[in-house]
Image (cartoon, rainbow, N blue to C red; front, side, top):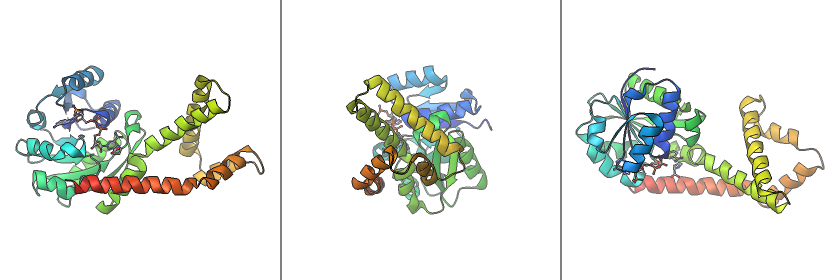
Length: 271
Ligand SMILES: NC(=O)C1=CN([C@@H]2O[C@H](COP(=O)(O)OP(=O)(O)OC[C@H]3O[C@@H](n4cnc5c(N)ncnc54)[C@H](OP(=O)(O)O)[C@@H]3O)[C@@H](O)[C@H]2O)C=CC1
Ligand SMILES: O=C(O)[C@@H]1CCC=N1
């Protein structure tokens, strides 16, 4: 991987997932910087990853080839203001903030800045993430290649042609890990209700989620076929799946994704 300096603005969950992925992929820690206003956060990042940390965004972006904006959408406006002047002319700015559009970034940074809007997810920490990406028209091939390289350190990258689809990407894969974690929590709770000790129920639920994930990754079959192979006619799985259908599970998931989609649009519209 190239040794271009990469600066992260915001040193929270997402930045740490991406920094962890970059280091695991062999990007030198000496070429990674993290800016965060919280001293506690800076200390944690520096201890965990051994990268340089900064209290001042302007100082952190100076000379950086790529700047990753990993702050909440709500603080994006002042963050853009803080980096506009010191940003290097050849810098590509990559935002991972939900709902912040390429136009929104241009309003804060100027139209001439190369901009990438990306939506990763937290499995990035284990290089098992997936990131949807779209770029401004003025992004050069080498900017796109650099963004791909940075984001591939966190897992797979899917380039999206229509920016309007990014809120859907956010609702499916950006937020998606939380849906599977919530399902695992509820399965463990149901195991306790069914008579298991809590620790056993959690271990069964967690390892089942992991095993199902490995099958999704490794098997040549679609999820529907994998489901059918567990479901013996007239058996226990069929009874559970019928109960899911009776509770309108598909509609429930669709509504949840629509709620995330709407919230993504609201967050983008706020800025
Ligand atoms: N978490 C996830 O799964 C995903 C998150 N995202 C997006 O990533 C972005 C970051 O989310 P996440 O990492 O979870 O959030 P976190 O709150 O964990 O991290 C954001 C960090 O930015 C810091 N910060 C606040 N203001 C500034 C500032 N002016 N300059 C520099 N840093 C600042 C915050 O400090 P303090 O806490 O002191 O305010 C915090 O440490 C969001 O926009 C979210 O939409 C995208 C995909 C997945
Ligand atoms: O919940 C959020 O808004 C962010 C975006 C996707 C995952 N976390």
